[in-house]
Length: 100
Image (cartoon, rainbow, N blue to C red; front, side, top):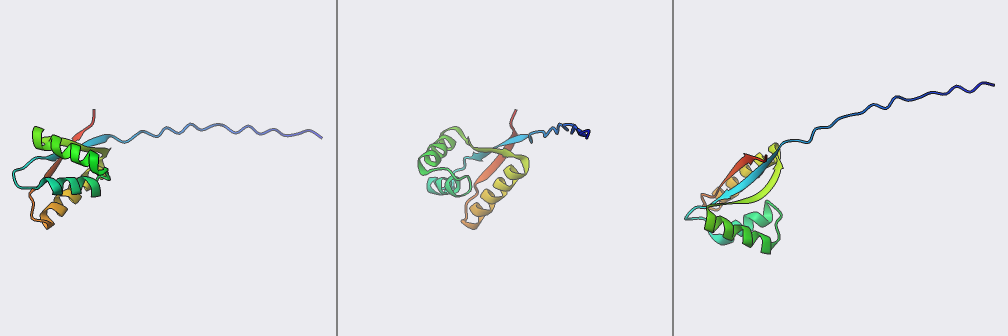
């Protein structure tokens, strides 16, 4: 009996990685340092030591990198930060920039 051999064609699927965006916290004269650390820990899942380091960088340099995410997640993080800040009476702002 003759055996039939079937060859499956390999289909190569190309999945492009999404563009990434940097989320920055911006310094202001009203938001407390403790609140910025809290934001970094709760929204960006940073450990306390790293959150404190980022907060100090923001304080000294005017803005600091909180994380790098795909666009939709970056936009969501900005919304979460600014909503939480408003709920606590702070004017904390975020910005996003395309990661080159």
